[in-house]
Length: 111
Image 1 (tube, rainbow, N blue to C red):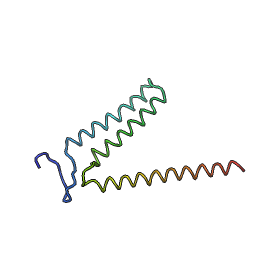
Image 2 (image 1 turned 90 degrees about the vertical axis):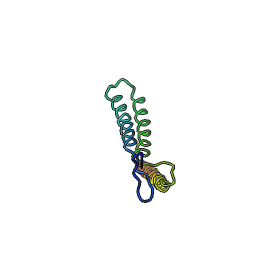
Image 3 (image 1 turned 135 degrees about the horizontal axis):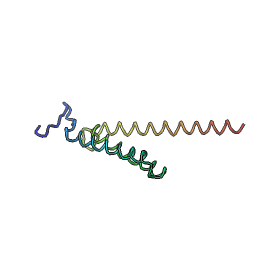
Image 4 (image 1 turned 180 degrees about the vertical axis):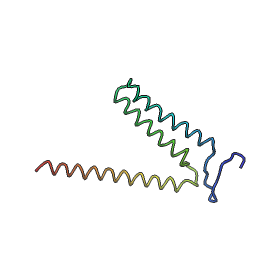
């Protein structure tokens, strides 16, 4: 193991110190930029909100790649599939809850 990458018995990679540092630096940058945008107040509310959502989405992928080590390797295939399944379930839960609340709101306001 010349490049100090740690593996488990199953062969799954735990990453290197360099990858953790890169992930940490990217996470800090992606956190500081929206914080600065809000605190400076020099941007419109719409620009600030869109920037926060975009940078949060990018930061999600930084965490998935650098800290959870989700990639296209064969060792991570089941982890990626479990993550996709979880995302689908969360989307169904949120959309279903909103649908029920809007339906209840509509039925309560009619009477």
